[in-house]
Length: 67
Image 1 (spheres, helix red, strand yellow):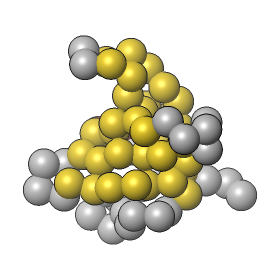
Image 2 (cartoon, rainbow, N blue to C red):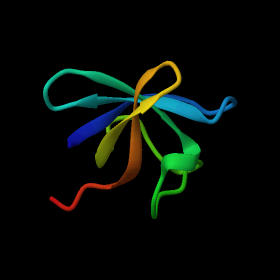
Image 3 (tube, helix red, strand yellow):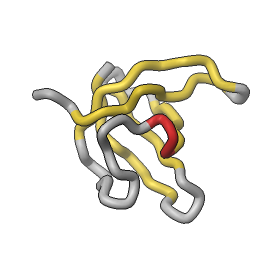
């Protein structure tokens, strides 16, 4: 899936991605691939997969968008 970083909670190490279909998905800094959480910015384009977490859907394998 593709989306953009909607919100970052830097002191807690997580954030939310808004997918192109409008869905908002939680992500944790541990799900980032080839991205640095400390330099990630809101509005940045990303690609990701969705997996089922303990509290619902969450983003996995979050990486920079290729287009």
